[in-house]
Length: 307
Image 1 (cartoon, helix red, strand yellow):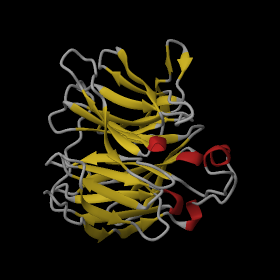
Image 2 (cartoon, rainbow, N blue to C red):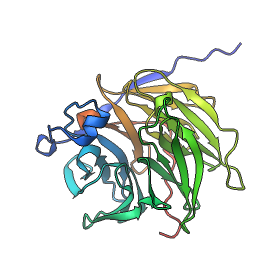
Image 3 (cartoon, rainbow, N blue to C red):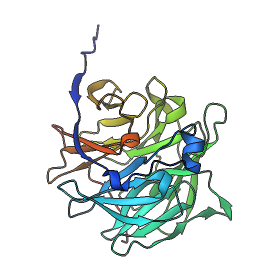
Image 4 (tube, rainbow, N blue to C red):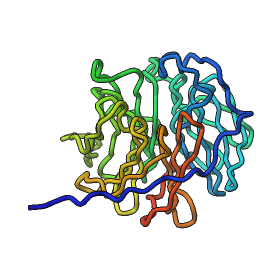
């Protein structure tokens, strides 16, 4: 009889906090709809590192992108009429942003200029895009979450090819959120926030998906959000409602549980450092970045093939 050992529990440490001068303790349309009207001075998402080791994060309600240097100092890179969430680099100078309000947007990090990348599909607006990941061929997988949930399982998963072809892979997801790929690129993991689970999506050679299954089941008031994969193929799952990051093996068994500061809302995560063993996590509602060092490096991220 197989008995699962209790997972190792580790605490995340504070790397940096948003300065008080950058916080906005005011009401916003985004917070009215997504935070029950609670005053939300910031809501951090989309952590990603540039080649120089600077961390970029999005502040959803205020349409802001920040750069945080290795010492934890914050710089405002861009502020625009949008609701930015997930981010990945197209090239060394250009961030691709999943913007809930505007679709896919791009940011020139040197100038702060934000412009459209893919804002509509066949002239129709997206429901509200959320997160994204590139594969080794430069194809972009991104989620279109909107206000979907168990009451309305109509969230979507898309794949955008470098030549502009857009594939609708799934259209029945109750709140698709974070996305991550297995090391061989043959499986996509999809956080299903309001289903409180993670789906396993096989990517077939002909470009289709089949036998999509539920890989991991969570619990609590808010389900899985951001995802990452390490070099061994283990899946890391940020759970904002619990203030935890699960580190799951190939059987979806928790090997480690990373705990945020009590009250933390852990939304997304990114590996960094020369050995990619340092994990950084956004504590969204407190404007904090937490971190810890793990024994296995994170999987290197891909970019657009022709960038």
